[in-house]
Length: 179
Image (tube, rainbow, N blue to C red):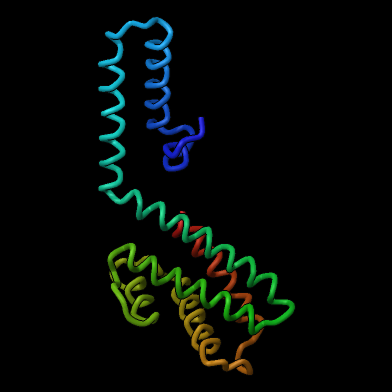
């Protein structure tokens, strides 16, 4: 059974078990023709839809969007890794784009930031929310510096090790924050 519910909640969640129960009840009604079972089946289906509506109201779509964004940005990280040996500048642009988008989306998702430059979003993530903390602060600041160099085509000041460090940080950042 491949359904949107499985894609949203996973294959072992309580919502799937609930949906399977509905299917069993439907199959039972279908096989014995007893109309008295239709009322509980529709009541059960209504409860499932109410749960889904509640989950949507409580930010389920935001969570799905965050996970999907993480997957797309992970593709940029992979591409940056591949390009690093060929052209550090291209890799720097790719990882900088992934970092900027991830930081801004995460700050917006956590209602810490509603626009402005990247440094404002980074500061919001480092601030009271402490989403970026400890050793991550130095790595995030390094990514910000790299992003500014790449954005201004300051290629002579971009070192392959800086790009590799940014790739490693962004990869870990995506795995921990966009799941």
